Image 1 (cartoon, rainbow, N blue to C red):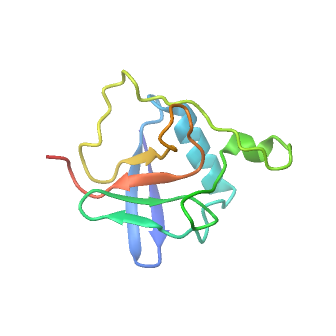
Image 2 (image 1 turned 90 degrees about the horizontal axis):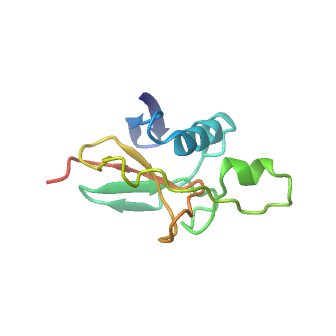
Length: 121
């Protein structure tokens, strides 16, 4: 497991990453951080006592790309990566967990992510 400090204009939060269980998602997130891809991204969705979502440089909640899409050199081709949590037993059961957000379709992860704001009931 690794932890990351996320600094926002309203405060900072530490989130946990499950690097052994979700290596693609963690690699994508950490390398996008290193590339400063998330710098100045807006928080465009907050669901009180549930999640906070960001990671779309357009600020609309409809954009973003994965690390592999950015590195492909194919003129902005969007390249999602596969889901990794199926069968892992991971649950959003405490505050500070970072999860990749998808478009609602299987294996559609890009740059957008959310983190949990409290433990689930």
